[in-house]
Image (tube, rainbow, N blue to C red; front, side):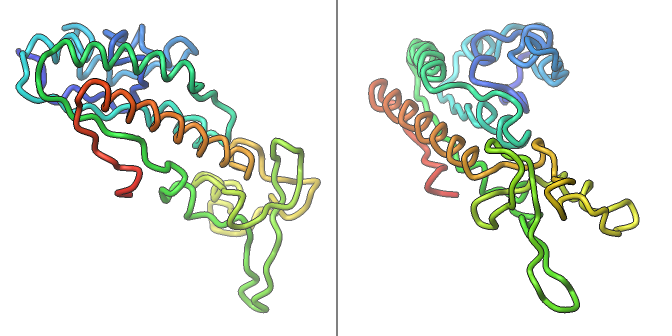
Length: 224
């Protein structure tokens, strides 16, 4: 009947820690995406922070912010990310709230989300199994339809479903500029740079807050 010790909600954004008390008022609900896991974890007992505070903890660990950029990346740049000023404002409010607990606090920063298998499994070019020749793929990017560059442009994991049929046969998608891989499956080099810039800004904010408040900082960006 008590609040959970682990109040982490999968899919939560930075905004949610202080503000969301249920799926209906979570960050993604504002754009019509309901995350029922808020109701599973929070159970009508208040926000994540409110429930943590009520337990009078001797130690709090807080790792938040990855979803603020991950949703943008996994959607091929079609979903918005949290801009750096907004992230800074929200994290400042969170840091003040954590400091008010008068307890030990460990915060963690954000790793490079584009290094995960979701972006490294499906290559941005194909190899002819017979000749070994590299086959260029074409995709919709922020600059329009163009040839994708392996190592710069990334394809998301679901891109495999449009490149291959259910039987594993090539569909022809991406093999010509007239039939490109759609934008939601392509994180192009400009979008990759935007993701990296956002993570860098987020991590500067987290480090500054940890330093100002005396929190321990887990550097997952370097660790991963």
